[in-house]
Image 1 (spheres, rainbow, N blue to C red):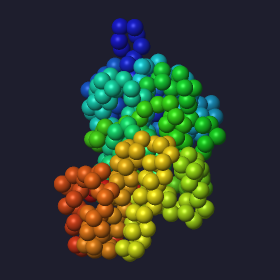
Image 2: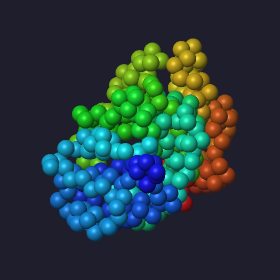
Image 3: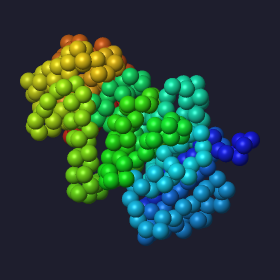
Image 4: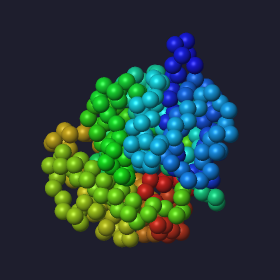
Length: 351
């Protein structure tokens, strides 16, 4: 702890039946190179071994809180925010793991960039067989503009300034049953600067069982509502079909023909032209966000073949996003082999 007996960082981790993975998750936090933190673990009435596993740890930085009844993720997170004492609040999920230098790098960045209130990072998305590098937009203006297309931050990677949240009276919507993070970022956009560190600081577990159909439906509904609100800021009216198309574009979903790819490019250019007049988003930030989306759509459309590479290179959008050498090689290989992969959102590099 620091001289005033208050930690620099409060780690907030909700837990519900995470007994299979929680050991590694907790160990990854306790092994951080930056050690001045409290670790608030909130158990939302787990019925498995989660509680006993947590109880086996003998570290004074752990604050174990058990809910009297199951209240859901959003309310549990708000409970954690309300009891946090740190200057910063770091999120963590019970089935993921943080890299040892995560807190040190995020703390250093935020101390240097006092304007940033919420900071995420890239992640390794992994399962038992492989891992993918998920890149998220970087640069505050780009992150803000990217909300027009989708979620710009990986929730368990974020570190937030507690005072900034308090001043803006920001918390998770207790009535939001899914996509609570995307909902929060869309509201933070009005008053808080956000950014991502362009390095993977967290291992994000891919659960093959996926969401339940009801939770997936709830998540889709929340996302559609947010995207509609963002488009309305531009005075862009869309019907259900166009909204679905817009969301698929934002997810980086691949297409099967050059004509369809041309339709994606036209849509992105249309949004840029509208924003040029309306000045809702910083234009350069929106250019970078749109270029990031354009690259992912082209990558996931590799089944078209080398013509998709030509289409990408001829687009004026490409100069606003420069993929790394590994990304370029991966794109070319996929196009040569015509690997029309299942759309994977912002998966941009396979390791």
